[in-house]
Amino acid sequence: MRRRISSAAPFALAGGALAVGVGGLYLAALLVAGGEIDAGTTVRGVDIGGLSRAEAIQKLEKHLSAAGPQALAVKIGDRSGSVDPRQAGLTFDTRRTVERAARAGGDPFTTIGGLFRSGGAVEPVVRIDEGRTRAALGKLAPTLDQKVRDGAVTFDQGLVREVAPHSGFTLDVNAAVGTLRTSFLHGKSGSVTALPARESKPKVTAAETQRAVREFARPAMSAPVTLTFGGERVTIGQAVLGEYLKLRPDRTGRLTPKLDDKGLLAAPEVAGPLAKITGPAEDARLRLDGERVVVDTDAKPGLEVTDKALSKVVLPLLTRSGAAARTGEVATQQTQPKVTRENAAQLGLKEKMSSFTVNFEAAEYRKKNIGRAVELINGSLIRPNETWSLNRTVGERTKANGFVDGIVILNDQFTKASGGGVSTVATTVYNAAFFAGVKLVEHGAHSFYIERYPEGREATVVWGSLDLRFKNDSGKAIYLQAKATDTSVTVTFLGTKKYDEVTAITGPRANVEQPGEKPGAKKACEPQTPLEGFDVTVDRVFHQDGEEVKREPYRTHYNPRDRVTCDGE
Image (cartoon, rainbow, N blue to C red; front, side):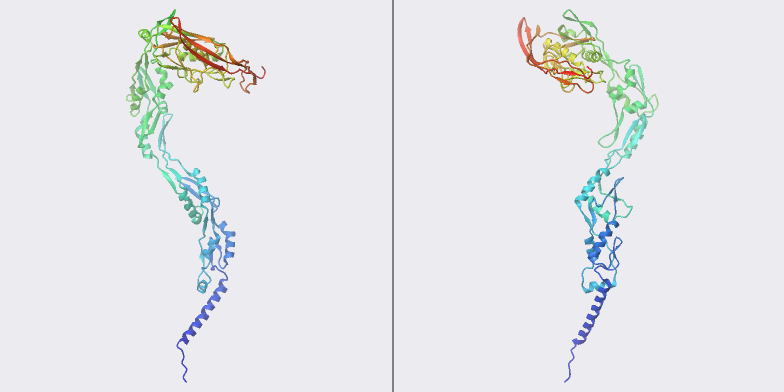
């Protein structure tokens, strides 16, 4: 019987041979590779070829951090800085890096493939803690952010200075997170990474500053200007002009000249010569003939130069060339006095309404401060229904305004401060207003009683918080005359009496409180004698045709004046 040979036998044999061949290669590949990672595999120069995953992770954790950047150099605009990757939450993920480097699996075909290839360089995986990255960038931002700087042109001692414009940059923290990660992964030694930022363009460009210099600044500082005021010639040099001259941008960024005309008018180089021909109007000088007001000296008109008139002439001259072209005449204008021989009677300045005097012990600071306050108050004209203010009239009691340090009351204790003594003037004005019968709008007494003043009829002032104000409700104008000596101050109200007489009735002291004793200040101590505190009421009584027509009570509280002794007293 003939045997049938299956046609599949050769194929089975071939398949068996093939199986034997593949198995041999697989075994050979396992013996050669010896691990899970292809030979020749490196991560940032660290060789992990032939290692198991655990071995590779251990080796990378030991060496990879040293292979990474120690600091990332960054910049925004022209400012540079650095970021510590670890503080910014940037590290290499060794486990995921090894997973990327390892063969995909242990199947024969992948393993056998390892016989015919080497691993090569593998890019590490970056782990990022975005919260820490944003925090590090937020801390870095203030050192790298730049404010936009407009171009500018300034003047210094008659010289032109051009300031170059500069764009502003603000770090975009959200966008910078990815940039920083890329820099950590791919940045090379010595490279600087530009972080994303929002740019602000300057409003005034370099081209505009160059134009302003060419068309205005250089011509303005090329020579002095000469001004004439009513025949008086004044030459103003470039240094003085530049001090009061500015170039300011308009809404379009164009630089336009601005002259501080008030400042230039007050500059010694201008104000000095002008003082020879200008001055305020002088009111008619009034005096009393008995109880009646008469004109003692006629009024005089004044002459002034306004800042607007000065600016109108100076600015056009600055762009001209040549001495003749840089000369101009500034208009002057006459000012009229408020009180003249002709209008004194029409204003109602016909009689003495009241007068009051306060005496004080002589002291150099009182002489200066009281004298200065009197100078500023004297001649005040208060028209009907106007309110007069001591603080507004006298101004702040500063050295620049002519005042010196003197004794004042602060926190129920004598101390030194500028303007000490002005309250003596305030008390004098208050009493003159009291007996003139005008409406008392604002006043305040000292915190404790001072013996030289009438009880309940005195006033103090504090710049910015306490004023002395009265309203002229007499129906006619009121003119204040103020005079001072080294030991007294007198204030007189001239006008038309609304009442025949105004008197004061002072009640008894109530709620008397005894003083204590406290130490003086460590520096500049002022001794203080004790005096009781009390309450007192003063009635202002108005009389007309021999009858009382109105009464106003004024209640005052005085704190005790504690005894204060100073070292060595």
